[in-house]
Image (cartoon, rainbow over the protein chains, first blue to last red):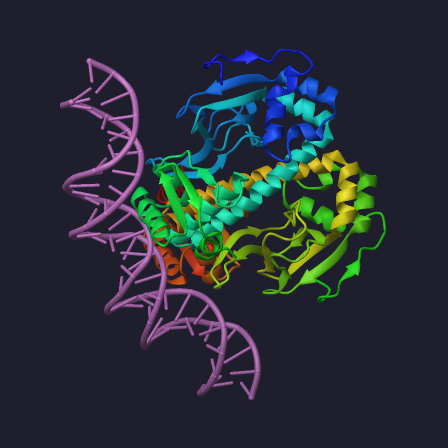
Length: 244
Length: 244
DNA sequence: CCCACTCCTTGATTTGGGTCAATGCCGAGC
DNA sequence: GCTCGGCATTGACCCAAATCAAGGAGTGGG
């Protein structure tokens, strides 16, 4: 699927040149390609380097100079912040089509790590920003993404500040199912570890495990294995999740 | 200070027409005015209505159609989300110069309520967005604000998910002091109630009160009254806040 | 096949912060 | 000046989730 971990400049061929970007488009409804005419897209693609990252490897670390921006083409990434004593909060999981490194700061405000095998398009920050100045449509697209990210960040604050363990887990299972755009009752992949889920929900792995057990025992979901589940009773799960 | 709660279209005079906006500029470093040439600013100001809101009054509610965008000219606003059973999470406090209603959705994703006496500039959503399309510089400014808001949302997730009560309160006291751009040892105003602070930090009012007492007893801050404090030992307070 | 290792689950115990209940401290109105 | 009502503080007690501890279960290497 990926060519090892070899990284290489995208070939300049008319179709291939935007593969990295267009794959993103294919997966998610709204994406960068939509916002640009073909020749602008060519120009942008020429800036990109394709990168492959194995599971568990750091993509960048909080505080290091933000030299690159990325689009996620394939795989899942976690973003997190840490305290000096090692406590960690995962602030989000990225899926194909998502944009990474959006920040008007000199350094990254969080760390990014591959959860699964990952394929990225990497853009040098400076040239991407120059390109963006000449293409307001791209800017608009990023603004729109930033505001929907902000909305989900606020939703997550409500979860972290005010929901019980079981409500957190139910909310997580629902939102992850929704994101995979699969039909009702389809199997949802859960690529991250229990420890990642705990750090995302502000809990311990033990509490995550017990809460999983509770929703399984009540017949709201079915765990096919540790990393796949099926939502059996979406409405009752929504109730348990305390969705406003 | 405010002309009662009367609301009125801004006069079209060359200086007055941008008062609402420029007051914002004056208070915060980066603001809308900076991004625009004078005649564009005139045009934008012509769209604005000046609004006054008394403390405790709702400005808009989560879920209602997002017909307006606002800039905060004077006072403090709280933004929050609620669960159906009344549990509430305050996602942020806005100060003069901040932008309100930024969302590419048809309805507001959160409620906004005046904490103090508030003065706003209100823009009809549609005409503001049309104006923005013709002025990429404004779009850029909003993108930059959105990404710094996103960064503080992530910081807040770390607080809500992983910090102890005392760490939360210390972090809050520090960040609020920083925002008021006052010198070391200056008195910081704390206009919101203990209940607002609790809902912002994901705690109860009792725990907020006890944590306040702890940092006061340790001599890290001094409470001049319930709504004003002075940071006495910023470095030790920073340590207690577990700032990474 | 066995061992070692990592990840996950389950149970027992502890604890930080929530809940419940007074009490104190104003400012507003009479 | 007194009372009332809404915050805020303080204390006693309790509980949800953390911590501590003991096994599984799956996986990869020898």
